Image (cartoon, rainbow, N blue to C red; front, side, top):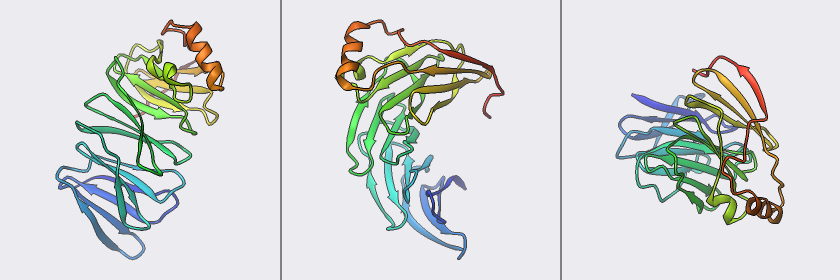
Length: 231
């Protein structure tokens, strides 16, 4: 029984994973299916990489980057427990994963190298990268939003800004195209748009962090009101 199915960006081939652990590439026009790999556990996540013929597959704690044009894969290593979240940046260069170990891992998709491994103090339920992969946001189960500037040096990555405004679990977490604002929508339907007033220059970011140790420095700039929650 299929558990996940995704098209690669701009491609016709469909990647399908099932409960037996089989990962297949389907050509809908020809009606042909090719077995790419058989994992030891069900395929739980398939995430297309924007602008590239790649799909990221996760089965338990195994995460692979599949190139559908070549039919080859490369591991994204380091996961110690089941992975339940994958997001690829819009520029196709980075991806963030998280799972039961509550570690946010950011990968360089061209090399497969782990760029950052961040363990939040709060239990996170989802995460997203800005289009250029330089900003990382995560939502905690209690509704708190965590924000890291990955280009801001070690200090900015050590302590995220914790933004409070939701009283329920956040189900939608999206950066604007320029990475300067973040839209969140919780399970009750409340939507908040958060703006980012931090400078982009790494030295300026470090100076800002040195002057602002309060983790509650981030604050919602605009409340958009209630909208229907995402199913």
